[in-house]
Length: 226
Image 1 (cartoon, rainbow, N blue to C red):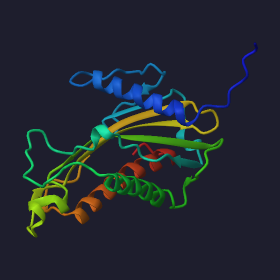
Image 2: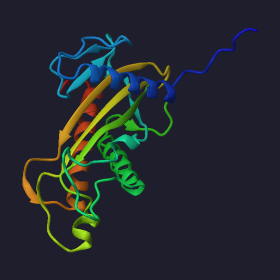
Image 3: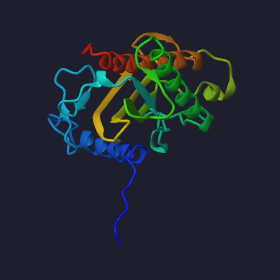
Image 4: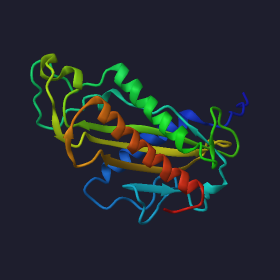
């Protein structure tokens, strides 16, 4: 029986590419990362993220629209407790479904706001000329338990050095062919300032981090290496 042609891959291959990325970066921990990935991507020297790879000859400035897939927050990163931390009775570092939904919303809002400035625009359906971005969270570490679980519900102020950190890995693909053309991995700390640790402050910090990643991508798509 003759095999029927398949439509261009889009979402599913990106999930596999993210998995490949995870293995590659994990194997590179503590040693010099590889200069190329198995998919043919080449490492970008002096990138402003921890790892950055691009398919040779790719020009991101040719993409006039961007499709931002829903941020993936796997169950394995929901426990945001720092290593060695022992929460008190009633306290929890475990992200709930609503917490995950809020993080995904912040990510989407940050990218949409950055890409509403007159350059490449966000589209809900990828097509030719669209850059598809698929991102997965690899780690979240908080400096304090979730605010509404602290001190068994007592109203007490929590002071911490920053709110915590978040790490991600992402792949980018051509909207017309589904071909993966770039991959990055990075991590950011909220800040190193001693301040009151609240949910509102944590949300502001996370939004700022997401906006920074979005601006870095927007600059690349505008033809800037900064």
